[in-house]
Structures are given as structure tokens and as C-alpha cells.
Length: 138
Image (cartoon, one colour):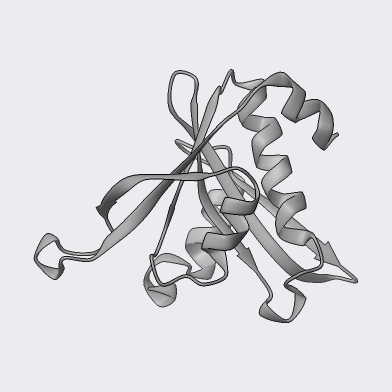
């Protein structure tokens, strides 16, 4: 999946001219990328976190929270009142991360990029947003 969806060429293109989303937010420390994420609006007043990745060695340092906060501020500025994310059911790090930040399970959908006959599903998580969330994150 990484080789197919995260080539240098594709990421460079998305950074230069993001389409249908707000583009990448990148956390850099001492010249090295330690995390990256991005999201966008999927409907009027509905935002989604499309990607959120961290250097595995840097988990637990607050980098993911800072990235999620930045994505959330973008979506609030676009009028989002709820925020969604898809997480693999076996993602033992991602699920607790999102649940600790107020996301709740709301169903499933086929995993992005998988063929329907594979039967793979992602959990759909959602949380409500309001302006006070933006003020707490500033």
C-alpha cells in the first residue's frame, strides 16, 4: 500500500497542489519528518481526517495530537461541525488515540483501496466539533 499510494512523486504533487482536501501538515524536528497528516471536508459541515502518521519511535510525545489539532482547526475554519476518521479494527494504536480524543464508533465501511470481494472493513469514528474545541487547541 505504501509503495502504491505514497510515492515521492504523488506526495510532491499533493504538497504543490492539493485537490479535494486541505493538503499535508508535516511535523519536522531537526530537519527530520516526525509525523504528517491531512484532511478535508467531505460534506457541508463534515470534515474527515484522511491520513495521520507518526514516526513509530516518536509515539506518545504529543505529535499526533498536535497534527490532529491543526487538521481540526482547518476544518472548523471551513465550517465543520463533525469530524470523521476511518481506522482499521486491528489498529491497536490508532483506535485508542482517536477514542481518547472524543471519537466514537459509528459503523464500518469497506477499507479504502481494497476490493469488495476481500471483505475488509474499516471502523468509522466520529466526533462533534464546536468553536470551543478550536479555542482549546490554539
